[in-house]
Image 1: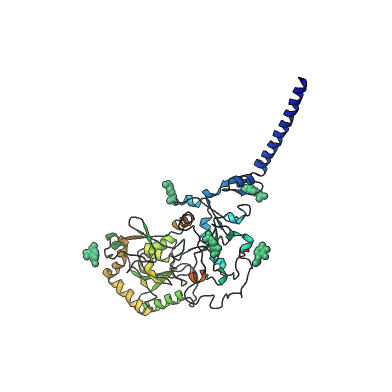
Image 2: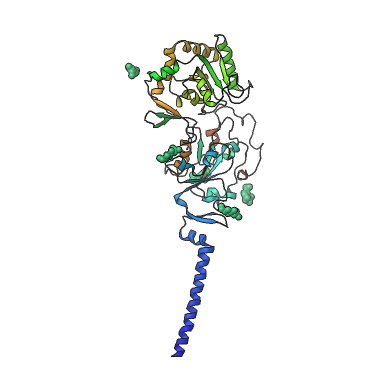
Amino acid sequence: MSFVFHRRLRLLKVLLSLKFMVFIIVFWIFYINRHILFTILVPDLVEIGNSTKSIMVRKSANKYILLWSAYRYPPFPVLMYKDIFAKKNCTYQNCIVTTDRNYFRGDLTKFDAIALHGRKLIKYTTRPNKSSHGSHKSLHQKFIYVNQDSAWNYPICSFKFDGVFNWTMTYKLNSDIPIPYIQIRDMAGNIVGPKIDMQWKSNMTEVDSDVIRRLKKKKKAVAWFYPECHTSTKRENIYLANYLKNELKRYGYTVDTFGGCGTHRCKSDSACNKKLEEYYFFLAYEKSFAVDFVTSKVLRALWHYTVPIVYGGADYSRFLPPNSYINARYTPATRLAPLIVKLMKNPKLYRRYFGWTKHYTYHNPMNTDNVCALCAAMNDPKLTGRTEYPHLRSWWNPPFPNKCQRGYLNDGNFVIDDDLFEI
Ligand SMILES: *[C@@H]1O[C@H](CO)[C@@H](O)[C@H](O)[C@H]1NC(C)=O
Ligand SMILES: *[C@@H]1O[C@H](CO)[C@@H](O)[C@H](O)[C@H]1NC(C)=O
Ligand SMILES: *[C@@H]1O[C@H](CO)[C@@H](O)[C@H](O)[C@H]1NC(C)=O
Ligand SMILES: *[C@@H]1O[C@H](CO)[C@@H](O)[C@H](O)[C@H]1NC(C)=O
Ligand SMILES: *[C@@H]1O[C@H](CO)[C@@H](O)[C@H](O)[C@H]1NC(C)=O
């Protein structure tokens, strides 16, 4: 009897110690190395954080975007705000933007997208070292070329960037994620432009009495805002504005300059805008020439009921309704000055430039819809397939001699860093 009891007790002891060992193993797996178990059992789980403090998250629920560098250049700063997609009430809010390359404990392949700013790329003439970060090994990861600045100022000089990127996010309207400076809506609030094949309403002649009342307040000819104290006549926009100024003088009118070094001062931006409504025309000359590069200067003009006189590398019919603006590219100052005078003296003719106000409204999408566009793209099944830009330079660089071709930054002559990913 006692012999049997002792045998059982021994067995129990063994069992107990076995259980204890199992417990130890389970404890080890769960508490010390739980991420190993989890990633084997649930590949969707990833660990975020560092060795001191980390959490497991279901990766597929979110899209992770790493901003590689150049954090202070738009549109990066706005994207870096905490919970930005929720704050902007975006349709898709499941995107997480970080600048922390160690977010997934250093595993860059876990990011759904890596965004590189074009302002940095101009200087780099060597191909990114793919092996060191292994990102293109990740099947779904998108390399995004991001740039809000003009291709004229920030061309891509090296052929080595061809076949690196998967998406573009720029002001160019044929970008995968277009981020134009201006947005056009119809009266129902639907976004209708800008667009490459913009279809404008054809009969926009009527103008509301409210607009007519505003137009009656006008008495001055042309306003010109430039915030920088640059007076170099080498700059085309400044040269052209001064040329127009001289031409207008013959008719007794002037181009009034506002801004930092302008001759006209206003206490605040809103005071400036109020003054602006007294002007018939507004010079919206772009500082640099590039396809689709139309900045918010045009918005300032339209929002304050002045007719924009535009000058730039864009096809403005993508951005502005017909007969709502004057394109100085095709109207030299010698013809522009008499046209301005003619329109100032003929209210009925001038009024026609505002026919669009009954059909469209203009907005600045920079900090709203352009932000949401990134997260929407990350969720768009049409976009998430394999995409590449084998000829990124010919897509981005201006179709006329740019800084690269002038020998400013030739391939191979300006190697700053061998590894783009060390920026
Ligand atoms: C780990 O992350 C936590 C929380 O983000 C932070 O407070 C801590 O300083 C980090 N520790 C190390 C060693 O980086
Ligand atoms: C987002 O929506 C909420 C509730 O509908 C509203 O209170 C808030 O003002 C909206 N925010 C923006 C930026 O539109
Ligand atoms: C790429 O980077 C890795 C790791 O930093 C390095 O070992 C390798 O030599 C680099 N390859 C080239 C082509 O520079
Ligand atoms: C344009 O609209 C006005 C009034 O809405 C109308 O009288 C005129 O016939 C229209 N013209 C054309 C060409 O459709
Ligand atoms: C991204 O582009 C690279 C280089 O062209 C290509 O190898 C890769 O398959 C592309 N990835 C995706 C997800 O489109």
